[in-house]
Length: 434
Ligand code: FES
Image (tube, rainbow, N blue to C red; front, side, top):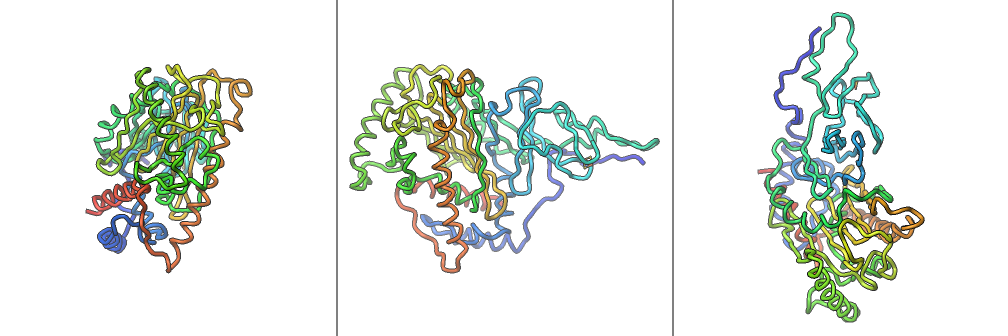
């Protein structure tokens, strides 16, 4: 037999929609009556059909953070990850570029690569050994005598990628929104001095939170709960998100320390030519983002109990350890802290309506020696503890959202970035349904 395929676009899904008309109607009504300044109604966090709509309307349309190039430093290195019904491979090619491929065999759909990360030449499906080149081209499939297969029709489907100062973003839509390319030149100057290309992975943690992905993101966008992070609050000022005139009495002393540290940091950044201004367009553009360089408490160097450095090696072209944290938030699934001695990346991959992966990766200078220049337990302590505490907060909220007695509650002033995230989400979903 001869096997050919005539569908012209190898990067499009075979089915146009995951959600039913009933779900569309219900979701439209929920979005229409969304109360500004309040949390979402329960079904947004608990309804499996709305989860499908989220995957289609958000994760299948917008740029999401996948990994950094430090995780795939050599040709053939790859990482895999799933989000909702989607599964991708991010693979470093021979030219140092990045290929993004759907991890779905074009024979009968098996996962091609099953490890979370590794290194490979060709990609061989474990089921019937169809073999793909690193760019996804099908290069071998066993055939019987006389049987013909047009291999050019059955390459792995491809997705889009952008590498931004060493951070790999992917997009699985046929036509990615263009304004991400406008954001790249705004954020790269903040990140490039830390030079991810000269870092290595010191540690990676993948945890599953029993909560909807939006609760995970909401929790990250405010520090109103930072009393629940005693380890983090040693270095990250818990007044984050507050403005002059909003400071509660118990944080006044911390606020004054923060103001002093901020002025000193800005002077230092100006001396070294480092960007520190806040750029914030969380819900006013499609590629919503916030970037800033902010002071840390104590020694002002890193996420430790004293604020002192956690790795002895400075990153990239930096010349001073006292540079606080350059923090980047991006809609819909990531946040980052770039410090002088290490970088922490966070990426969120939804599993289903009530489960979400949070992957945290700590990067240090590639010439830093474990046990000499840094200790992994010390390096990771603050954010490991903080992640566990955040997981517990998210899981408490997920339980509440499932109750018939759950009702939308008001976001406080210091939670304005949560409101911005929800605004961004509801705008995108309205556009999707329209
Ligand atoms: Fe991959 Fe058959 S499903 S080779």
